[in-house]
Structure formats: structure tokens, C-alpha cells
Amino acid sequence: MSAPVPSTFEQPWSVGFLSNQIKGWIDRLGTAWVEGELTQWGVSGGNVYGKLKDLEADATVSFTLWSSTRAKLTEDFKQGDRVIALVKPNWWVKGGSLTMQVLQLRHVGLGDLLERIERLKRQLQSEGLFDPARKRPLPFLPNLIGLITGKDSDAEKDVLRNAHLRWPSVQFRVVHAAVQGDRCVSEVASAIRRLDADPEVDVIIVARGGGDFQNLLGFSDETVVRAAAEATTPIVSAIGHEADRPLLDEVADLRASTPTDAAKRVVPDVAEELSRMQQARARMRSRVTSFVGHEIDRIGQLRSRPALASHTWLVDSRAEELIRLVARGTELIDYRVDRAAQQLADLRSHLRALSPKRTLERGYAIVQGPDGRALRHVAEAPVGTALRVTVSDGRLHATVDAVDSADR
Image (cartoon, rainbow, N blue to C red; front, side, top):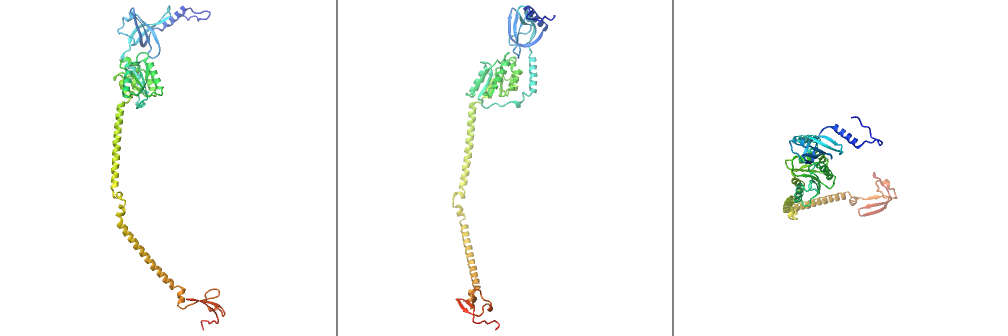
């Protein structure tokens, strides 16, 4: 097909020409295998008119399954099935609409889905998203619990009922989301991010009741798993029953076997906690009573000792020794006094023996010149010198009349 002449304001294309051009472009696309979810499956006159939605993106295409092709199908299909289809795009020139003619249709095999999930699991595990070290502890008693679940679902009722039975004052912030189907992934991931951004929410529970494998596929989707891994608020996964284990269980901080189990794991039982408090108080009371009793006994033993039983015990027990020490002290003091008195008498006698007065009493005299100095030589007192003579009982005043030397 030769390239069309470009359209201009002066020479515009006709609607038919444009529609034919579109048909030519689409016909050149040929056939393609696509995977999606059947969101509409209507039968009319043996033909099927339905819609196929992308598993992640918000994109939907209409398709037609002619009765001749439908007669060759070996499986039954319904809305919500995950399928792989060989389609050929068709542009209807007259009506200006695009439809997809389904040439082959088959369910996505369980083995294929398991293989894809296993491949995603290995990838996420290699990134460390399942590492136990990443898992955060749940708060003992959350002030506000975020709950993501289907509207009016049994899972919602189970979580709320069991949580309030265990702790009547517990509060929830519930965000309803599709828990299966084409809206599940986007709504659950959005709900996780919304509650995680709420500073009042202490823990998030993602809950869904049981279902078949395909109904739980949304909780193994990479978008949901990564949203949970990026959350800073602890997340509890309560999807399906004990045997169900979507990838959200692996990345969550706690995996609960059922929604009821999630309520029990997140909210403590007020009766059990009160019982524990009573037991703790009883143990404390017993320990304190035992300690006080032991100390009372110890104080009683201390008070019964002689040193504390009587304030005179120490004096009484030391009275004899004290008397002996007092007597010994008196004896030593008397001895020292007597000895000192004797020494004093000896010194007095010695002093008296050496005293000039005793010398004078023996007949000696002290002769002093006019200047008061004692005379030792006759030359110191020439004739006419006034003298002062001291004897034992007084003094005499004399004048030198003559001087005799010692050699005469």
C-alpha cells in the first residue's frame, strides 16, 4: 500500500478514507497471544461477546468469539477466569469500532501460574524481602488498627468481632478493597499505602476469607507484595485458610492462618492480661511479705543480742575491768606523786645546801664595795673605802681603816 497523501486544511481526508487507513494498519498487526481476565462473558445467538482486562494495568478490550470457534473449545469459561487468547484485531469501517476476534482460547494452567509465582518468589527472596531480620515486632496494644478487607465480608466481621471480644476498647480504621478480580491488586496496594501513611495507625491487617487458588492470586502479585515490603507500619497477612500461602505472607511482618487468628495475634486478651496482672501482683505481694517478714526476724535477732537488749550491758560486763583499771590508775598516780614529792624534797635540800644563805649561817660574810660588787681582793678596797657587809641575819656598813695582806 502506497503512503497516503498527507491531509491538509485545504485537502482533508474523508471519514471513509481515514477508516480504511485504520483498518489497513490494524490488519497488518496480524494475530497476537494475550493474557487477561474475563470481565464480561455474554452469549447471544451462539456467539460470545465479552471483555478482556489487563491483569495489572487499567486497560480493557472487547472481543467476539464466533459460534464456530466456540464449538471447538474443550473448556467452559465464565466471568473472572484468567485466560490466554489468540486474537485478531478487526476494525469495522462502517461503524468505526474496534473488536478482537478470538481464534483460540484456553485457561491459564495452574502449573503456569505456580511457575510464575515461584519465579517471582525467587526474585523477591534474592532481594532480601523475605529476610526475617526485616520483620518488625507488633505493638503490644495498638491504639489504632488498620484493616484492609472486602466490604461486608466474613473476614471483616471475624476480625472486628474477635478483636472486640478480646479488648472491647480497641479501635479500627477499615479500608474496603476488592479482594479478588481485576481491581484487587490496585485497590489492596493503594489501601496499604494509604494506611501506612496514616501516623495514627500502629499495625495493618490484610484479611480475606478462603477461596480457590485463582481468587487469591492478587495477594501474590508483585505490586501488592512490594507495597507491603515498602511499608513502615507492621503488616499482618491473614489471607485464606491455613493451607493458603500467597506471597504476601512471606513479606508480611506476621502471617496469621485466618482472619480470626489475626485478631488474636494483634489484640491481647483483656481477661488474660488482667489474670496475668493479678498473678504478678500476687507474686509481688508474696515476695514483699516474705522479705518484710525476714527483715522483721532479723531485726528481732539483732535486738535480742546483749548489746542491744540492755543499755548497761557493756558497762556491767566491763565493770570489774573498769574498777581494776581505776584502782591501777589511782595507784600509778599516787606513786608518781610520791616520787615527784621525793624528787622535789631532794632538789630543795640540794638547793639549800648550795644556797649563799647557808654559807652565811656558817659564819661567812659577803663584802661589797660602793658599786655593789663583791670584793675578792684587798686591793679592791683601799683605806677609807665604804663597805657593805652581809651576814646571815642582816647587813653592816663599815669603813676600811687599814689593809693587811694575806702574807702577813
